[in-house]
Every structure is written in C-alpha cells, then in structure tokens.
Length: 553
Image (tube, rainbow, N blue to C red; front, side, top):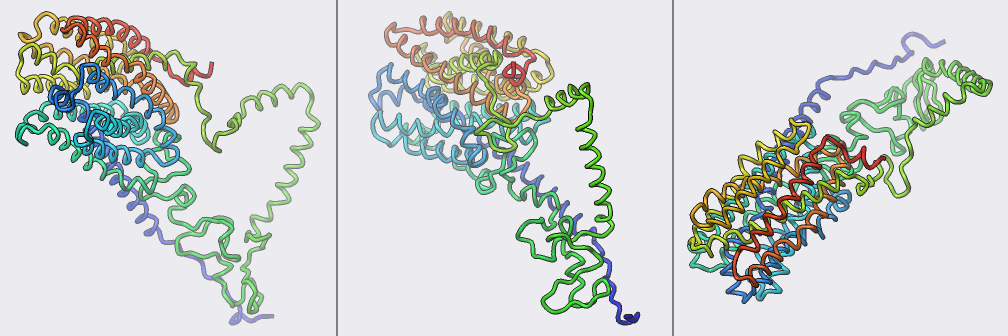
C-alpha cells in the first residue's frame, strides 16, 4: 500500500487567458491592417485601369503621324481594349482559383506597367499593338476580379466600395486625358515620353498586392462573400485548422504519442499523460521507456478520461436501439425518410473540388445575358468616347489642349457620380430607372455633338460623362444579381467577357465610317442608335433577380 508521501498527484493545469486575448487582439490588428491594404490596392488598381486608353486618345493624332497609321488602323487600336478584355477577362476566375485574386491583380498591374513602358519605343505599329495588348491584358483580369474582391472583403458594403472603386477609375481616366498633352509639351513635345510616364502609376499599384501573392489572399473566385476559401488564407492568417484553436496545437498524425488528448492542447500546455513524467501516475510506477498514464484510460492512440468512456455502452445501446427501430418501422414512415434524403445536400459533380459549389449554368440566366449585352453596349459607348471624342472636338476647331480637357471633363464626371449611383442602385429594388436616365443624357449629348460640337462643347462633355456612368452601375448590378462569391465571379467573367466581345466592332466601325465619309455625321448617328438597345437591356438587367435562381430552373 503506497504511503501518502509516495503518492503522486498530477498538478492541475492552469490556463492563462492572457495569451489567447493577446492573440485575438493581434488577429484583429492584422485583419484591420489587411483590410486597409486591400482598400489601398483597390484604389490604386482602379486608377490604372484606363490611362492606357485615354492617354492614347489624347495623343491620337500625334501617334498616327508618328507611326503612319490610317484611320482604320487607329480604329483597330481603339477596339483593341474590348478585344483584350474579352479574350483575357474570361481567364481571370480560373487564375484566381489557382493563384488567388490578389496575386492575379498584382501580376495584372505589373503587366500594365511593362506594356505602358514598352509600347512607345517598340518601333512600328505592330510593336505598339503588341505592347498595348500586354497592358490591356493586365487591365482585363483586374476588371473581372475587382467586383470579386469587393464582394469577398466587403459583402455588406458592395455599393459604397464599388462606388469608391469606380470613382478612382474615373479619376485615373480623367487625369490621363487632362494631363497627357500638357506633360507631353513639358517634355519637349515627345509623344513617346508623354505615353510612357503613366507606367510609373502602375508600378505604385503593384506594391499593395505583394503581400497577397504568397498568402493567396484578397479573396479567391471560389470563396463565398466574406469568407476565406479553404485552401487559401489571407496575409497574416493561418488556415482554418489552426485558426480554430487560436494558436492551439492541431491534432494530427504528426502529434507525438502520449501528447494527444481528446482535442488539441492549449497554448504551452501538454496533456496530463506526459506531464505525469517518470513519476507515479494513477498510483502505478512508470518504468523508463514507458508512457506515463494519468487517471485516464487509453484507447488506441488517444487518451480518454474514464468519465467520457463510461458513457460508451449507453451510446452503443442507443445506436443499436435506433437501428432496430428503423428496421422495424412501418411503411408509412418511409416517405418521411425519403423526403429527408431528398433534402440532403447533393454531392458536387465530378471535377468540383470538395466543399466547392458546382459552377452555375450561367447561360441559362436571362438576367446574365441582359447584363452582358448592357455591359457590352455601355463599353462600346465608353471606348468610342475615350478614343475619338478629343478628335471630334479638334476637327471642330477646338485646340488640342482644350480638347484633352473636355475629354477629361467627360471622364471626371464619373468621380462624384460613380460614388452616388452605386449607393443609390443598392437602395432600389429595380435599377431600370437609373439606366433610362443615363441613356437620355447620352442621347442629348450625341445630338449636341452633331449640331454644335464647338459652341456647346462643355455641356456635351458633361452629358456624355454622365451617360458613361453606366459602367459603375453595371459593376454594381454584377454584385447584386448574384448571391454568392462564386456566383459573382462567374457572372462578372461572363458579363464582362461577353460584353467586351460585343463592344469590339463599335470603335473600329467609327474609324472606318470617319475615314470613308470624311465627317462625324455617320459615326455620331451610330452612337445614338446604339443607345436605344442599351437602355432596353439595361432595364431588363435591373430587375430584382439572381442568376442562381434562374440558372437552377
């Protein structure tokens, strides 16, 4: 009989609450820092999504003379953004699933910087086109992933964050239109330098996304709103397996024998079985090379307390009784069980990752098609405006610097309206009235360009800038017409890729009509005619529907 002096008691483990609280505070600080970095990255990226286009539009005549372009080739250059957005934009969700949305946007900003730096000095029209395509490829993937990142990080603030992103996009567009000509004059009238200087802004936009390259953060295309994907943790975050314990040790096959308990041990804590050490545990002496066993019964390779194990016979009896009742259940209960089986989750189809929602049959959704056509027609109007409006004013007798400023006015109208319109759109059940109001502004602006392009130039610039705010409205509707992050990713890729395919012929056709008619009457008539179907499909896209519901029918 062991004496009281030789009996060893396992000291109780005292958990300190200071360490978990410190970790939670550190986690909150990291998340707040990461969120601020995402906002900065969104703003800087949006600033770079249009200068490649509007800087070229402001110097279109100089570039044509320098490279010996015809009007048709210049029209091809103004159509190149739509072509690149359609071809490369569809790749964005797949790239985001593999590398993370933040990493893809970072690479996109690097491509923009490289393309803008190379294209003025590439030598010849072919090199200019190739370098422009590189920059536009970076713009294309970033265009598609921006709504996904907004939905992922700010699911309850889609309208306001889309407004901030659209406002920054409009500001970057206006700055390139307004400053390219004065900066080119300051650099000695060299159009190559005037175009290349915008690469510096793209370099600055790379920096906020660098922390997301390794962590695959900033949302992936496969993750839902406001949640992390299972395979990608954000910067400074750990995977769910370790996050669940707030720094506690995860139980896995790599855990040492005798160190496992029924769950993960707390920070700095070992299981009582190992703390017993070489002393007496449970009244028995442990020998060298043996594991110390506390007053716990070991089952397999887990240590389970006798209190927990004492309930095992009762649980087994309950399981056997339930199985016997199920076998003896009358036929009238079978329909109930079948109904429960029908309500059970349907396994994902082959090819889907475990836990990942199956892809939507997006082409079955009428709303998705309406949004794609609306996106394409508004993109047609926007790229015609960015590529040709300065030339329209210059042909009407407006000086080159003033024409650039008028183009900047058109673009800068998106700064306040891009913040107001998305917020208003999210408060309305139907966004159709906003679509109609913007369309009327566009029709009046085109009529003014035809009747008195120089006399009322400022008014037409303001009206056409207001009409171009259909772009932030379309982005907002992308976020509103889908319920989940994967749905937003698919809808964004489908609407933008299909829309940009639709918009390819518009700027090119304007260049051909301008060259062969010798004036702007026919091109302006084409722009006005395209505004009618834009208003119609935009009204349909604004209905309170979701693509998930329509695709499931």
